[in-house]
Image (cartoon, rainbow, N blue to C red):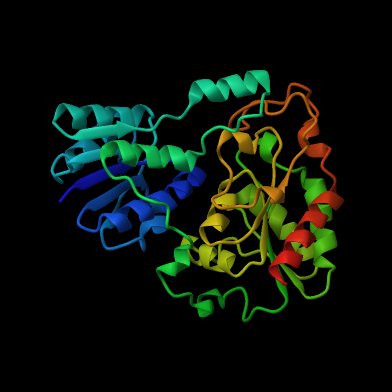
Length: 346
């Protein structure tokens, strides 16, 4: 029996993209055991993937922070009999763990993030050959470790029954069409202007038999979402009322999710909800598009010669006007959502 340590600590969206790969691998090799090392907040993503999958939760801002934290992790994993290490992160912390495990005789494989080819795409703006998807890069690590597997994942709720009663704190039953809206991302270059997003919400909330659910986190996001939910009819703000498992449950009942290039795109993808995704500074060709999502549901400005300007959207706009987002009209977003809804409700 092999015991495989799988390392992917952050970010939320990248961790979510590991779920389909790990489930597919663990399902093919039931005789082996797979332990995912990730932030403890992300642990629920892996809790129901199978009897041979478990989580090693990290408190990266507490006892597992810094050099002392690294030694605590090493002490823990050194006694658990791991035979293989799949480093799906390749950052300083995982490199240290990987080096130790390799020196003590474990078989190790590390993700190829394609940093050079991503840099070339950013510099040249040549999008004619989309780069390898992150999910495929994850699969390659397991292939090289000796655990090749066909992708068989569909939906997180294939493994656990859905219980609508768990949503009773925010809604009693489903009526009409449900639209999720996740307007935020970590970086400004990936956020549709809030005044334009508010207009989208105003239009959608006025439509018959339509309920909007807002998704976000943190105090500042909560302020914005609270204002919108109080200002417009048929808009529900569930922040603070649901844990991650219940948030995924709520997402699973949506007819469509409107999201940025952000974690919520990936979470909705895990429960087979079609996502209308808005892209600004980044680009789907860099390999971070939602799992099994339809490319027809992408909204972006194709003719800007400055796109993409960064891999993760963290750089300030060189034009200083964020034209990649401001040029996207509210009407185009609403129309795309309506198109998806028409397909879903056929």
